[in-house]
Image 1 (cartoon, helix red, strand yellow):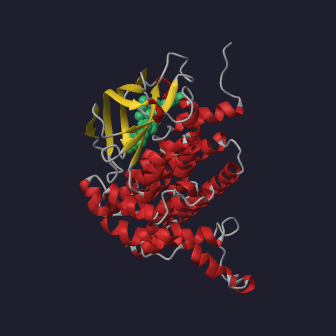
Image 2: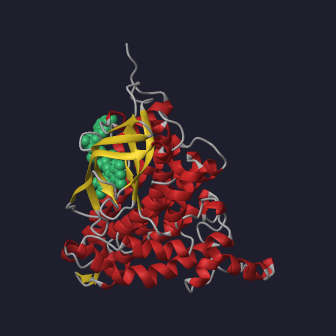
Image 3: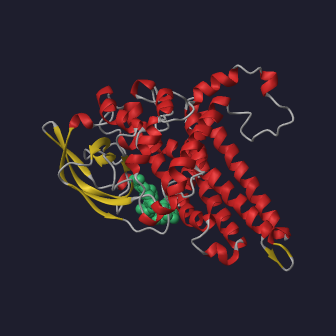
Length: 424
Ligand SMILES: Cc1cc2nc3c(=O)[nH]c(=O)nc-3n(C[C@H](O)[C@H](O)[C@H](O)COP(=O)(O)OP(=O)(O)OC[C@H]3O[C@@H](n4cnc5c(N)ncnc54)[C@H](O)[C@@H]3O)c2cc1C
């Protein structure tokens, strides 16, 4: 299905490329003189073909318009998701029954990495919300009817999804959210509000976390598919941000919004647990999307400092500059290695909460260090809005905050190491 969609979209379908490659003898295809790509021991030709197809969309449909979308503080989510959906990129690891490609999560990771070639952080983040942050719980625990209604159009790019967890008074402490969904007859009546919602101004539905009972905080929450065009859903404002400009971020209020109880994902009361599971994919996906962005910042800095001469020599020739760029490149590779290890464990069914938290923590820390160091080497040019390094310096500051702040990741890691203080 996705392959044919890719044909319709004028792209060379990656699986037909696979067939083409498989016809070449392995001896011939493995040029021993060619340098190994860092991922070549782990990823198949299929992974690489998938990346190549996506790169064509990025170069043709996204990067030429990205500066305009940054200025507009919103990208056209419906248009871009339709293009990505038709080519299969919004459901890489989702079942074919619902329009997905039916591949494992490692394929989503190479897609996330490739999306790092988009020249701004906002659009990859918005795509990630659609493909791997708002939908994993629905896919795993939702009824078949619910998946047909919400997952199928999301994978196809006909609907825009958002994830509603954070609130004005509850971000790091997810258990303390106040939004309620109270059963009245066959409906839930929803009251409260959500804050910082990516895609929120354009979304057709939200994967909503709400309190559905008075049970203790980890057992009183449920995930509900909430259509956004219902009476009582108010988009209060598009939040004015320092970065991630091309991604719209909304504050949303709910006033007696009625949704059928059958829109509940899985079991009532299991929402907190489902969301914590969903966060694992979000954190791995988010880490993958950072790698290429960081590599591109480093590469652009190498190119710039090589041609920029001060004191009669390229800036790059200063040892402090080229050593720092080598150090950062080493760190990026270490993060990639940790990510691939985590993904390998995840697709074999292991709980990777600790590893996903380590990935997210290191991605946030490194994003800050790398963009800051690189920006410095650009001098005054780095302080302008003309260059990628300053945009990513702003955009990537979010990695240490969104989807669980660094300190939350440290707390999770400590919990798994059993070193959190206990009651005396
Ligand atoms: C651009 C953007 C997009 C977002 N998109 C979404 C989205 O689509 N859906 C969604 O639900 N949410 C979204 N968020 C919300 C995001 O996940 C939260 O901002 C994040 O979880 C932090 O919550 P908070 O902002 O309420 O900070 P707070 O919870 O108030 O935390 C403030 C700070 O306290 C510190 N802190 C937290 N916990 C600890 C601790 N245990 N020990 C020590 N210090 C600690 C950290 O430094 C933290 O940054 C988005 C946020 C932004 C900015």
